[in-house]
Amino acid sequence: MRNWCLICFSILLSAALIGWVGGWTRTLKDGYEAYVVGNYDEAHAAFQQATLEKADSPVAPYNLGTALYKKGRFNAAISAFQESLSRHSGQIEDLPDLAYIHYNLGNAQFKSGNFGRAIESYKYALRLNPQDTDAQYNLTLAQQLLKQQEDFAQQQQPNKDAPPKTDPNNLGEAEALQLLERLSQNENRIRQKLLQEQRKSGLRRKKDW
Image (cartoon, rainbow, N blue to C red; front, side, top):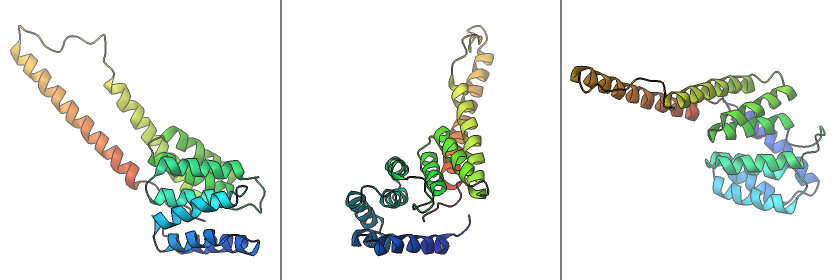
């Protein structure tokens, strides 16, 4: 995973300064300063207030989404990023970049386990910025995990055409079938654990600003 922190913070500073020059509130600056030092609770509160103080700007809800994401509140982050999109006019001068919003929306959807929606968001981000290798990487990962998720769900469905698992006249076969069933359950638990680990650590960087 690449370290984009310094680059992201420099981009953030530029975005925030543009807001201040145009009369942006102290609240947004406070949120940024809290975010930089890792105080995401304070950043969350400041960015939440900033969304109310400048209701037509996509910046504050986007910032709010990044703070919520850091706090692990992925569903709330999804709502914040969607709010940022709804306020975004699509003009070049609007901040943040539309591709970034869709990318981070995809990350939040990925973390919430909604791989299908994440795939849609990554694809949209790539349409806006086809050179984004991280979006492409995360898209591929989300597609792989969605396939695993679907395969796992399909395996759990009972097979109506399957023969009975036990034969009262053959205790040896019944015991063997029970052993195979336990092994299958263990394998499924291992697959679930691997899936959870991939969800936690597989994503490439989050774009702040």
